Amino acid sequence: MGIYSVELYLQVRLACADGMSQRAAAKRFNVSRDTVRKMLSFSSPPGYRRQSVPQRPKLDGFVAIIDGWLEGDRSVPRKQRHTAKRVFDRLRTEHGFTGGYTIIKDYIREREQRSREMFVPLAHPAGDAQADFGEALVEIGGVEQKAYFFALDLPHSDACYVRAYPAAVAEAWVDGHVHAFAFFGAVPRSIVYDNDRCLVAKILPDGTRQRATLFSAFLSHYVIRDRYARPGKGNEKGNVEGLVGYCRRNFMVPIPKFPTWEAFNLWLEEQCRKRQQDKVRGQSETIGERLERDLAAMQPLPATPFEACDQKGGRVSSQSLVRYRTNDYSVPVAWGHQEVWIRAYVDEVVIGCRSEVIARHPRCYAREEVVFDPLHYLPLIEQKINAFDQAAPLQGWDLPEAFTTLQRLMEGRMHKHGKREYVQVLRLLETFTLADLQAAVEQAIDLGAIGFDAVKHLVLCRIERVPPRLDLDVYPFLPRTTVEKTFARAYLSLLSDRQEAA
Image (cartoon, rainbow, N blue to C red; front, side, top):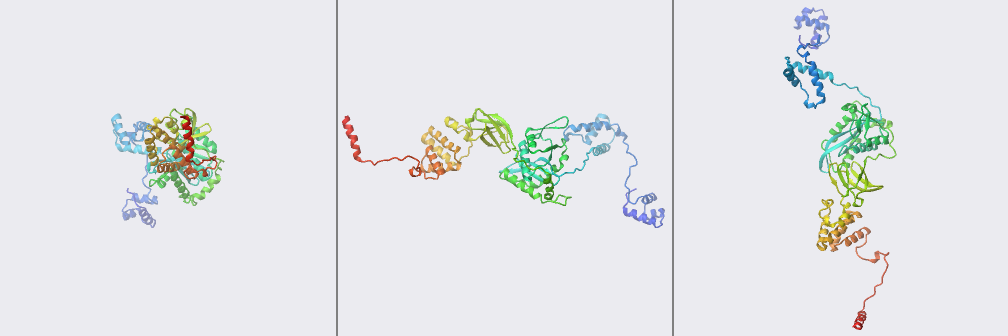
């Protein structure tokens, strides 16, 4: 029997209710009497109802084999797992299966439906959070690159904070939290994470986590209760997983273009503020209105923020370099062969010895690179002037054109000593700014005063705002001398002395 419409059911039931016999109804509506009887039993089409479990005699003996293959697929890459066609081919070739492909396909589909996981809807009390990292392409300073953006979500209110970094290192995880807490002005009571190796050093047999050192110190500073999703179970922090996708679709399309990371992050913060005016589906209040309940349940900020940096020790090499995570960073040559401490932030590496900071560098996320500061090597190059032309720290040093002109004039007039004086001019950058020294160098070239002493005098005059000439009136602290006029008769005494000697 075909499937008849509800309208036909209505007509047949009304006709029979008015006294029409089932035989007459069958003849009038052109259906069988069995169909009329069923229409009187059901108010609407009941649909097909299976009376018994389907029998698959040709498949039953092979079910255990198929299940074994499919269970084994759990440990192999998804693209190398059995398809229904591959199962069918193997059964025929290896086990003499004589059934059809359709029953294999139907069995595998039903098996997958039975094994699909079900989820319990979760309630989110105010004051709790979830955190994760996402990836997207961005253009920073004209260079297209991958950005790793930290996302913190407050599930009760759906308020969020997003911040981008060039790498998803442990310092970026912590720095993202510190900025998020400052953004909200409060600290969540608990945060749900995945098992990222920057946070979790090891999952112990009893299911507890051995936290990474930096992350553990961060949690202690803010007194946060950390919770973790099961490995591979992103649904246990589904809100922040959804936030990562939302940010990628709404904040990263089209590809963002900003001059610096800081400018990009300021823009992201503004997008997070604007989002607080939205209403999420199913909610009558805006995100900002519900955020007030989150903030009331959160903890106050501590007196000082946590310092988001990786701290390690090191030693200065004979080339005045300190190694941190495969990269070498220079320090002043005066600190050669000494023990130093290293603090690596997301944007810079700071190196110190005892209580003194001796070097700062932009952080390099490449591998096996050398990051030089030319000023660190000038005192040594001044002593070993023959190494000047091949000194690696000076290669690619982008100085104004006036410095190249001064170098050429000094070497042309004084040869080797001219190189040493040029290095002495460069060492003035240890004290003065590049802009002030550049102006002094240009003035020295214009005056034809080609020498270290002249450049130093001119830059001092620029700083002290005095005219570049020897005027004792502007140096009242110098002792005064009396210089008498010279007369021609004064030379007669010299002649008389000469005659007496003869």
